[in-house]
Length: 476
Image (tube, rainbow, N blue to C red; front, side, top):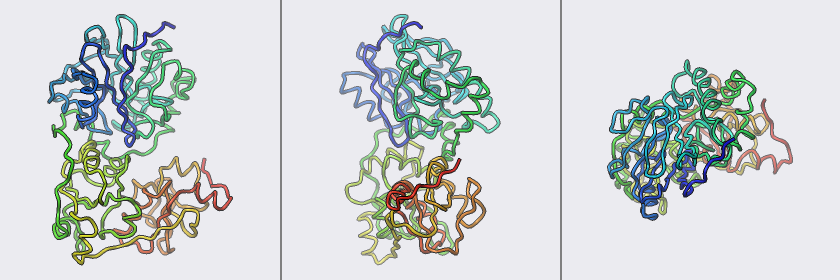
């Protein structure tokens, strides 16, 4: 194999742990920088560039993203030129590249490599120092220990795109030098990955040696392995691709605060009435323990953490206004940033004074019981992803993924894995996940439907197994 050149400076990775994605800032060596797959908030990229004395000259998109709103248009408002696939049909100003097209970056060159599979228009970008490869920005083609899923366009195209990805890998990417650094966009924690390692960057040779999908003996085996590894994904994936194609609204810097709403204003727009769906979704972003101790009836518990955006987008409608309950010390800017990142822009405000103000106004409060996972007895409903549940669960626990609770409920029909929901007459039902946050979200959804006597396990199956000195059940 030929040898790749070392990059002039290693690209700076800006990692979104919640969505499992990485963006990159590349120092071009002449006071300018290239951003690859930037997310919507321009602040981190502009700040990182300023700290290094750089101006972001270009923002390159590897594909039309389904899991986050692209930030290229935001950066374009600061004078950045946008680079994107000519096959993507983006409806805003950009430089359209096709396979083999190159962009002179002033001593470095950026070459577009058509690598369809994850999406039809997908490009990988090969950074060249002279004629020698220096880095590959692989987007959603080659990941660390995985590849990106091919089922986000249309069900009937999933296998077609999987076969296209096989060809992209073997005919384009694996022909590159083994020591070439690879910088993927998707990684561990991303629902676009199928699945990925905890490592964020790699080399061609490392993946040739260790990526199980690259070890497939044939195209047919690769397709089978890839499709067998696909799980569910949030419904907002089905709309963000078109948002990114047409061009997301430019919102500017993320504000540090949400508008303040009085308890009466919250009650009017977000508290449920008798048989009437409120105008705004009521999201309680406080820690799960705070929600359990006292919350507004009908509120959905989605604790503010790195995974906040995923569950906000999975469980609520982006077209509906949202009202939030928070407590002192929580980062409002982080909440707004995460919401914007998945296309949630109608953020009406937050309850001024928090739950203390709500209670002082004499308005109703509900509680949810909590129990240590090690002490759980009786019916258990495990709301983790199917792969997590199959890997080990409390004996006799029923299963339904948290994301399915908006359209299916225990005791009615079957869960996505075919198991029946727990008998709604068996009380109490204890909700369990890995730590407690997703279980509290599930409990809040079920409580909104009138399910009584719910409890939430703090901890997960491993805590139960350790306390009982008993192995967990596993599924094939």
